[in-house]
Image 1 (cartoon, rainbow, N blue to C red):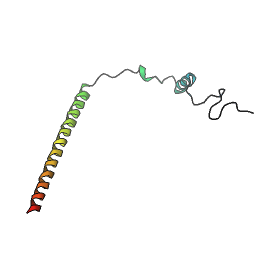
Image 2 (tube, helix red, strand yellow):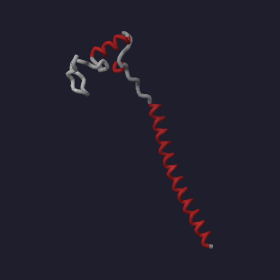
Image 3 (tube, rainbow, N blue to C red):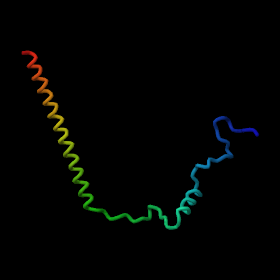
Image 4 (tube, one colour):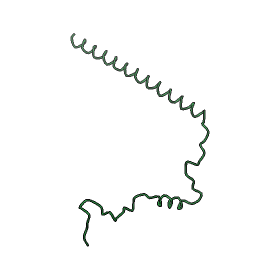
Amino acid sequence: ATNDATPGTVPRDRTSPDLASPDSASLERSELGADATPAATTPTPPPNPAAFDRFRDYRSLVSKFARDIAALRKLRDLINEMIDELLAANATK
């Protein structure tokens, strides 16, 4: 038996069993049973206004916390500068 394929290639007459084919998709659907329906046919639930309000509240809280954190970082930097100035003034005495 001779191998006509060059090294590193797969001979043309062989197919990979793990490749998806239309038959495998229909087989999976038949294995699932008749009661399995695709997600596209399920009705979408109506929008929940309370959930949107909660999301808006959470988003505003997150932005408020981000502003507070930025203000606290500025305050920390100012305090560190004041400490450095006091230490420098004390060292020159």
